[in-house]
Image 1 (spheres, one colour):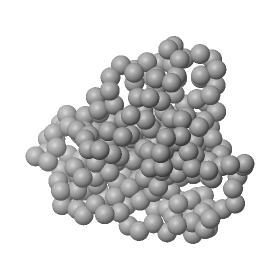
Image 2 (cartoon, helix red, strand yellow):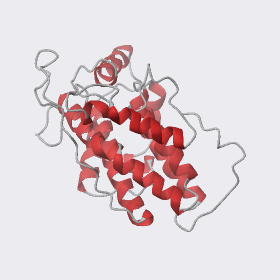
Image 3 (tube, helix red, strand yellow):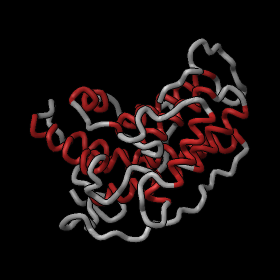
Image 4 (tube, rainbow, N blue to C red):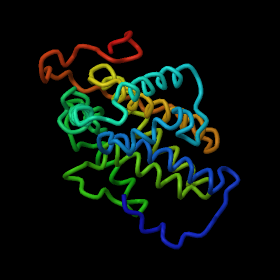
Length: 259
């Protein structure tokens, strides 16, 4: 996400969130974007193992849901060799591809698929998100390779809005975008991936993303004076399974252990 307005932007503190707090929250969201951008590599695995999940973020995450997700993340990381073997890295790459590249688990990482009644890519939701980008002077790097409404694109834009939220209007923009876009579909995407993916670490990471976004909404809503209840989701029509056993629930905290 290119931000031409960032150059030369001077400090403009707000009583709502300090510049340091906004920067820290933006970095939180960028870590989530990194987890969805490409497969885990040896360096990132080493960094993540260096601290418990609660310490990865500036946002004070708490509660039973976060604790349960943290267990998945920690156990998933522990299941990877230290250091990761070539076979470990191949397995991580394959499961990442099934989640984010090939739709191997019938869980699209793009908003349109979840909000279009026919489950199609690059529909109304993508153009609504693109309008958001245009109003703030940015655009997706290449929408043909990664659409505007991809999880990574939306998280990168949310981080940008947090950095720019130097007054109440800016904070309201960040909260509104979060409510009207990622919070509508990312939790459902995370639940489906966690139920179908092969590796516990990826189940944990997508659920962690959903939990973080929900808790960020609880922080931003009152500060911006917004009800953070997302708009209703229009569920896509069910699609035929895309492979043997792909609809068998696995690896989710909601249906018991699967690893």
